[in-house]
Length: 463
Image (cartoon, rainbow, N blue to C red; front, side):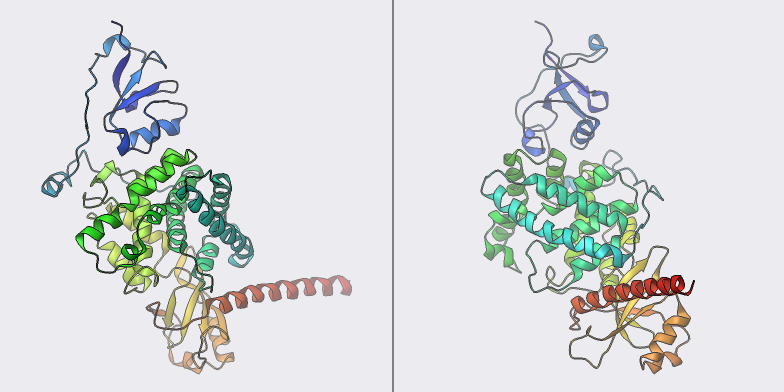
């Protein structure tokens, strides 16, 4: 009988082959069908994230070049994938076959091409559309209906483009405490941190879009979990198991939609897995967790511990960074954690800080090469709600910063050797109106442009 199915390494896959079986159950991968043709390099990359070997059907697709040298191996029935139990995690954590490759940072791939104030109006429109379409698509998928996935993809592309042009614009907008706060904000913030990191390491734009979409949709399965369990602070063992089921619910919902790419689903499936095998739902470890899912996991964790709406006791960004750093080479791959921290900076846009003068301010824009000296909105602490009256300063320009603070009655500036950030503050300690601050610095840019145009007009008239 002629050979129909042969086992080969995923490294030997080429376009045109038909994959008929994996070295693990189909249910534990994002692929929706039990068998598919390899069409693109992305298909091969996706398979490499889950499998070492696959079976190909040479009657349905392309055969290996040296078929005669490949022995026919019988297909085995039953599960072939082994969970990492608590007893063998320690044995496998540091084994070479699970050690992921070090992340490669491609410097200079993306540069900030527009100012924060110029990008904010475009980013605001993208945020508005993205929130609306994420809500709509989530509800459609949850109900098993045909989803407007194309619109969401277009918004994701817009978000990625905006972050590539000016990372701080999106960061600033999702920090605003608007009255219409949406339940998807955690996913949106997590997606932002993930995209900023991907931009920092120079990841290809197509990969960034997959990462962004996967992180946005990571919690869609929570629509299938009871509100009581979702809101519970101290869950029982049974409640915790129900809560963790959101990952598998999400994977199934996205599969059934038949519109979502397998690699997006893989981010959803593996974003709760951890480097040491302590995560869920499968308990996989190291390089068995796809890279994009590893990044999504770090971004999600950072946002959860630093945001008031996700953490019981939210902490200042520097503390969140410290907690995340302590998770390196344990819950998360060490070099990924280090590079992630470098990508967001110690004082991300929107961080509440105290200056050496004793003044309180909010970081409104970072300098990529001077992250410890960002632009700050210095607040008037005499106000009940902070933000209605503030002074915009750039800590890179010491002389101008001192002049502006003195001009606005902040005489304490005379008693310090250098105006700088002394520390960042817990996010719930002050009532700050970030929307008012946003309007202020955008209006400042408009006024600056008007003054510039007026000056040009004066020069033309003089001539």
